[in-house]
Image (cartoon, rainbow, N blue to C red; front, side, top):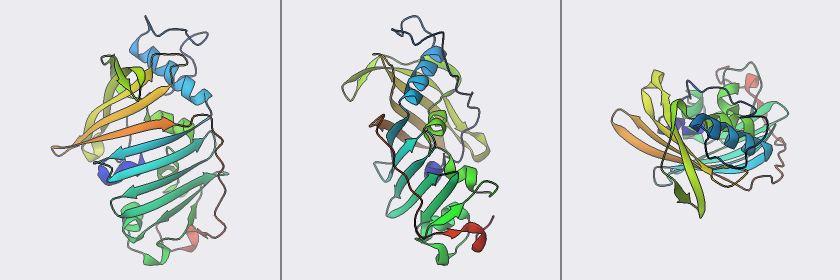
Length: 238
């Protein structure tokens, strides 16, 4: 999940594939279903909406990301403290724009010539998967899939919606990040995700990250920027 790199999340490991169905048809109740079945019913329902705007926040809103994602395109605006970046994904190409600090954070080099400018990245470039992850709705739903042995949290109410939480593990062991991940699912059909909570820890420091989907089914209109530079025409790593 690239937009959480700044707070210690570098990757999602051990995610099981999203299944297309939890049964022959969508159930009318979650009663009697296992945690894995509830999770898959909810993710299937979210994917059927075809789009969503998801707000990610952490560290008392010092990190805030708004992602408008469709099935094949998406846009994200990320604010990290006083820094900002943007991503567009359309027609199989990612366009990324970073301020000078985030150029270094994301590309691993200092190059002010590309700061605050749109850079296009295509498949085959080392940054393509890193930048495109979670911009489309299907890839975002993979992020919302807790790992490990799944269980239920106690029923609760979030944003006036009755929910049940499906809880599992979250972790990126290669960078020393671990924690728990809970997807809160509406208890009313079609059982869409209401909120994702990640409790992330690294080196004894804990941060809570929340994802809140909104505006499901709204049209996502994404176009490529008029002015951009192909990454292979820059001095950035590729």
